[in-house]
Image 1 (cartoon, one colour):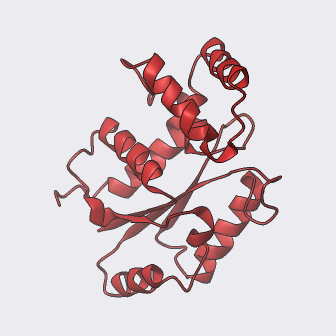
Image 2 (cartoon, one colour):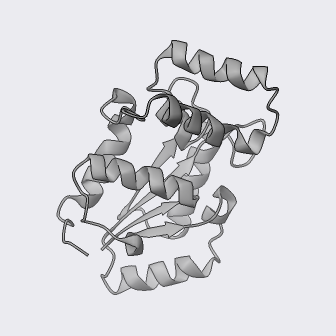
Length: 191
């Protein structure tokens, strides 16, 4: 069995959409995911889900793991925020749990700015003119609620481009595609 460890339910949904796009639809179930609730929970080694995970690894029931975490913004969190801090922390965490041999990680963000979330990666594939319209809309309605900003941007794109909500074939998804393909190759049994 393989495991994908991610932050939240919306991340899981977007990841499953991408996995289905890759052709692995039906090769996974909810049991393949550990949804931690938020980024800081991912780094809590005393979380009981990690104890269970390590027991399953020790009994050869789990062979591969991919951590998918948001870069977020360094200005918001000096420890876990920003690409470089997230990279340093996830590498140290994987080493602390002694999972280096079976683990990969992917830091989701806008590949150009190296900031943001999984939604930022999705929106990085959108035409610049359309992204500008989304930003202008948020400015026009004077939307200040930062915690919902990524969700609203993603929903705006879903509404305005219903026939092609995401361009999963875009090169910005190459690294994530490689990590997920590596995760599922040889592990494509139906749940």
